[in-house]
Length: 388
Ligand code: B12
Ligand code: SF4
Ligand code: SF4
Image (cartoon, rainbow, N blue to C red):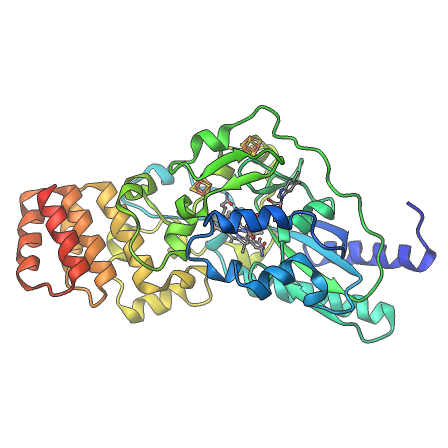
């Protein structure tokens, strides 16, 4: 690819500055419309997005299709990756008295961290360009097909897990996207598919959310079955038939990434970002302590963290499911207290958990609550738990 002297120096500056800001991956994509909007629309039409209505809003779909709906003069797209993985404490995941929070949510909320760095990158490019720039920075929340753009910017391929995977860095990184009204040379899109005959993620997914590649070669996920969706995005009850498979995952899920050979111990890049150091309270916390959190304790626990997205009721719902899967008598007293929680969602899942444990004290508490419970959905859970 031939570069004009000015563009070459700007591309080099982008690389150098992105590296200095800590981004392990950086690439540039053309600002052309996505070639995969048909797949996106089909995925929505099949209802695979569940309650995530923001993904299907007509204006948001149009902006995903064409970046000019977001930045009229967009000329190039910088895509970055920021590693978030940290050393895993041995064997903790198998301790069912503890909850597993997905790796990406154990440190400080990534949205601000990554966006702050993207805006710093934009300021450096502006200084270099010598004119005010039009720029938009996105991390996770905007109407942007981040993985589509990342592949186009040469950062990696879509694994069967649907993760964007780099051949030497795996997938434990956040993506960030910077739209600019500056011309940059685009990198070669990542064309290869390195999954080959591997199907480890499909086999390991406990809820059967990964559906393999379709006829077009696109990896398909049924988000409504994904533990990440069920524990974070879904607001109401978790479908009963999926509660057992969630085990002790209380916020997000990493299984399809953990089993991927491209995330093997020799390849994994540990984060150098101090903000992503796991908070002790978020690294395999004791479930019995989490279920006892009142509003004030929840506020302390979730402040500045991505876990806040689930809300107290959603998070305690997840914790109750994990306690039911632990099936220990030690879980009974805190679950009995949770039967009196102000939130019906928490009471209902505490009832399910006590039904799973099924001991005499657990059943006595379920019976006593049924005497006074007025909420229809909780009464249903209590009755099913007593019948189990
Ligand atoms: C909605 C969403 C979810 C949903 C749905 C997940 C999904 N796979 O779609 C749920 C809640 C389940 C979820 C879970 C997780 N998420 Co999420 N999520 C998003 C979000 C906001 C939108 C994704 C989306 O639009 N999905 C709909 C599908 C259809 O679109 P797509 O994945 O972009 O798929 C494209 C390709 O399939 C392509 N395509 C189609 N056909 C073809 C054919 C060929 C040949 C090719 C090459 C491409 C191609 O076109 C599609 C549309 O462009 C993005 C941020 C963003 N704005 O992009 C983060 C994002 C994808 N999530 C992220 C993360 C970290 C996670 C979790 C790991 C969190 C966790 N530990 O719990 C899990 C992983 C679960 C999984 N296996 O995907 C990261 C992924 C980073 C990476 N390395 O890939 C992102 C990019 C956020 C970020 N800024 O870092 N997530
Ligand atoms: S994040 Fe977990 S539940 Fe979701 S697809 Fe991956 S393995 Fe399955
Ligand atoms: S586990 Fe195997 S099939 Fe799944 S994304 Fe990784 S390499 Fe691809």
